[in-house]
Image (cartoon, rainbow over all chains, first blue to last red):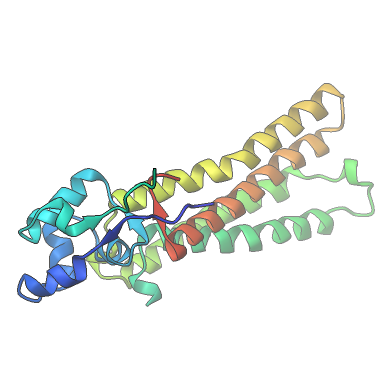
Length: 74
Length: 147
């Protein structure tokens, strides 16, 4: 029914690198609920591009540092 | 943890519970007033109206109760809630269409009003059940925009 996302992320590691930010604090900065931030972190939800950029900025890094997508096989 | 779930997920559980309880309640009301009449002659309008009005009232009360016992943060909605909501609505809509088409076909075949109304009503019930289940699954197992 719902295809699992192939996008992986480093939010958990980057939260700790950014001064042990809690999920609630990051969610507040990004403007989503804590449940949604948890779902993104666990790879259960692919956020919109805007939210992805907000997460990267809130963590003080770039989009590709936060989110990774596997290379397509030729 | 149930009180910390997303508002749309809570809403889906309430809707699912109401649909699962509501339809049997309708059937009980329907057959209680049957008075030995054949199916087509059973008065269905009031049992149907009572079930619909009752479901709306119970839904409002349950939503209000959950809102009172939930912290403000958990009552917010965001893009994920809206996307899952739209996905569930679209999933459930299939049965509304099937119910409506069945009603239309029965009307064209000049069948009794009882069967036309009940086909449409059953479509609503199945739509609510399927839509709620789709929403709960999307919240529990994950959801991404490329579905």
